[in-house]
Figure 1 (tube, rainbow, N blue to C red):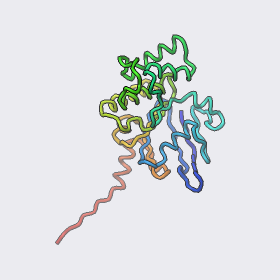
Figure 2 (figure 1 turned 30 degrees about the horizontal axis):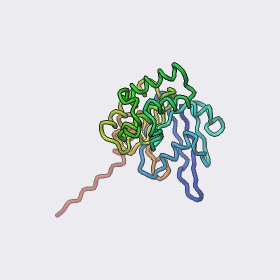
Figure 3 (figure 1 turned 60 degrees about the vertical axis):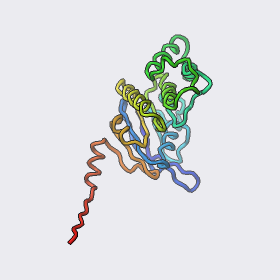
Figure 4 (figure 1 turned 90 degrees about the vertical axis):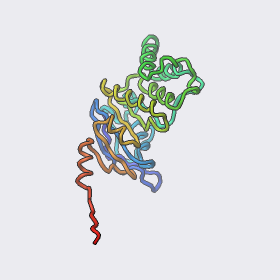
Length: 235
């Protein structure tokens, strides 16, 4: 579903990403862990076609994001770090607007909006303006806007930052359900427990490099093999 091959990103003399390569199979849930400034958001921007790589390429279901951008982007749903909603519009109006941007209309659009409101748990707040929502509720609408068109791959850039535990749990359960229903997920986070719960495979990125890649069991084994125990005996 997704192939990232030797992706490099430079800004002037500074190299932000250093030959990143990995694959995500159809139906998998792939997690990216890394501290602030590690390069996660830059990589997500390249995968979704917002930035051009300095070198390397990205394929979405075989479509080259550099040369076949429109076809590649049609496969994607993107949940950015920042809230990408119209605050003076209701939840339903936001979903309807973005649905039209995806080319949905008529009965199909109304059906998808209704289904999405149910999935994100906001049916009863459908006609309330988004500016009245909590941070967690706004993020749930943000996710709803990304899945209206039923993308083949959903890319989420730290979707639970700064929200309450209840909304966080709701988002995690929603993502889990989408993946179980067959949607491919790419999920970036600071939180190990999130990717451990959601993801089949995990990549750890630091200072622009992919420093580890594997399943949770493989990464745990790697840590165990590298563990060093020092005993100091006092006389």
